[in-house]
Length: 334
Figure: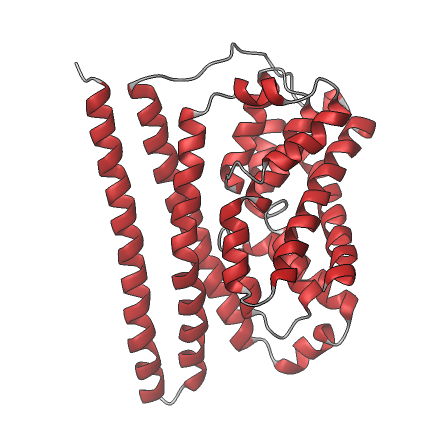
């Protein structure tokens, strides 16, 4: 029989493989960044060289934070029992919402992990409003995301503060809106389960599975998002961008919609936003606030977990609240 020590060795091997995979990705992209521009210049296509430059900058800067974020997220999901959350939250939903929202500051998690965690919290008796506030705040304001934002926007602490405030406001407001307007029929029946979690080999297995899934899944979205951002920067004519960048409202709405479509991981979206230098700071703030709480993969996950009736209403309301929060906070701080 395999014992806990075997599980530990297996987990260490998985971690090493993920780290090596991340390093390999950086090397491949860096080599491509060197060969890509040379090939582009040789073929007399400077735009391709520019595309490689933008793509490489986004991916190489984002991968280390993506690795750190998925590592911490997997560890929390495997080794921290959900009952811990229910014990520290106030019993009254209206009071539990801001506490759950603030918990996202110290409990990192990615968008993909936040949906099953929220579902698990509800099944263990946590008020849906508090669980949903945590679902929105954890991937948006955790330390990894804030540090990544500070590096993507060097010398601009106001952008970090604005992201923290706008994202936390979005999570808390949506939690309170659920307290006031939420209906139980919008959620499928939650069957309460006993508190506790896997032990021994099960915990290491959960850690290994979570680490592999989150890194590979989110890493793919990072690459796609970087490619989309580079393509957007190179292909879209400047005259078209001027139509949006010249209008404060249109630029905010465009990047808020773009955040839903690109599905960039929250640990890396700040680097994508920083590359969209033609847009206003408030528009780029909206991109970073909307993306972690509403995107296509999150809508799909919410539909599969909580049902279509919930996902449609919750995603639409969250998008509106996130945009409004970004505009208000951006007007105040940026």
